[in-house]
Image 1 (tube, rainbow, N blue to C red):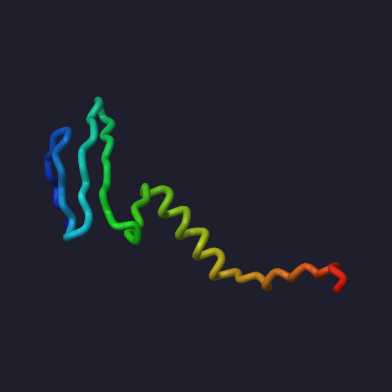
Image 2: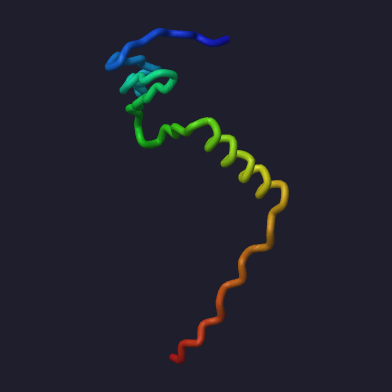
Length: 76
């Protein structure tokens, strides 16, 4: 299900108690959106989110051995 809302430049949509979406500008078929949210709320473009998820899934599916620590050459 998807809720579709019309908004004009400068108007806002409130999501829950903590997230605000603001229509910053509309030019042709391009819309600029601004978000106000707590720092612990992740907001990503879809393509960035999908790429990060794919990388995380790949890491989990193919774990590598832990990196070896460099040998210290310091003399006490």
